[in-house]
Length: 69
Image 1 (cartoon, rainbow, N blue to C red):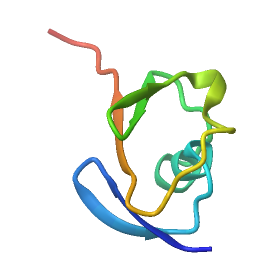
Image 2 (cartoon, rainbow, N blue to C red; image 1 turned 180 degrees about the horizontal axis):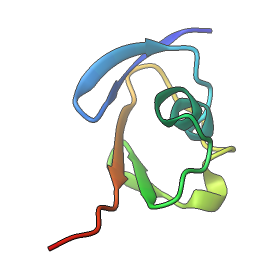
Image 3 (cartoon, rainbow, N blue to C red; image 1 turned 120 degrees about the vertical axis):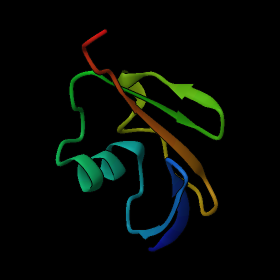
Image 4 (cartoon, one colour; image 1 turned 90 degrees about the vertical axis):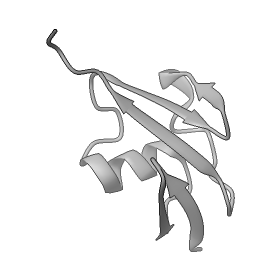
């Protein structure tokens, strides 16, 4: 099944069924270090990424921690 979602402001069509699937597609890992995810404005705990389904029209924000000053 293919859905359309928005990830960090970019509209995309994806076969990702879960947050973990989307991260694997976009970042190469289902659970990359230093990453936080929100779906439709709700923070999704790392422990729930594999179980959090993505619906058509979802708005996903992926934030990566960057070291520096």
